Image (cartoon, rainbow, N blue to C red; front, top):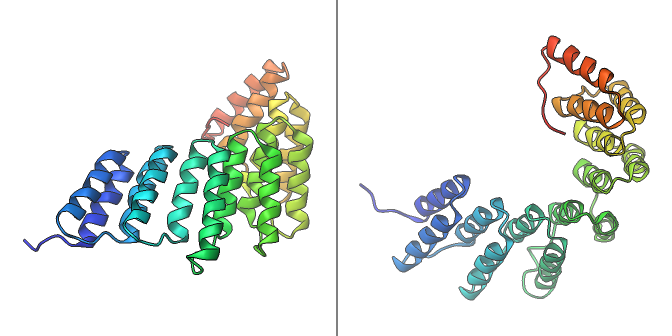
Length: 258
């Protein structure tokens, strides 16, 4: 058989990352280097991503340091992989520090690897998951200051940040901002706004949100239905929740957790 090459190692590392085996992925990286092969930024990034998928930012950051020690320059994709690790771990402080490091390196050492929209959206996600809606908004303002154009992910993440914090008015406000910016809200955005009302047990508002969703031509999803049932339960409307659930089952709707 032909000898392994860099692509062979990268393929195995990526597969191990998908299989939730980051330690084995890094072991393959070490084996590759010990065998005299040159690990590229792609190889290190695949290893970082393996840890990121398991919400292990400290290990992702450690592999990044190992990459820098090998005198390899990380690119945007690499830094975004580290950022995603902090977002998955709901660690806004770590994400913010990583992005600050990214910005500094882009300005001083890696002018061709500047933070992009994904970078700031990922910081927003870390803030949203960490229960820091004001910081998510600050990250949104920062991406604007960088001359980047927010997309549906940017707005949906801001909506979700406030929904998680139980601020339905702010979540609805960001949904309105999204529409005003000319970006049609998708099911993810509507569901995030609906979930804000559901968390407060405001079934009427959640139902109005779903009506607006349908009026916008967006089909309710399985999560939408689950959110509505949850809203009815929290509002104490158990008969309505039960009837709604039975109707959905009869209609063959697929249900999921909100």
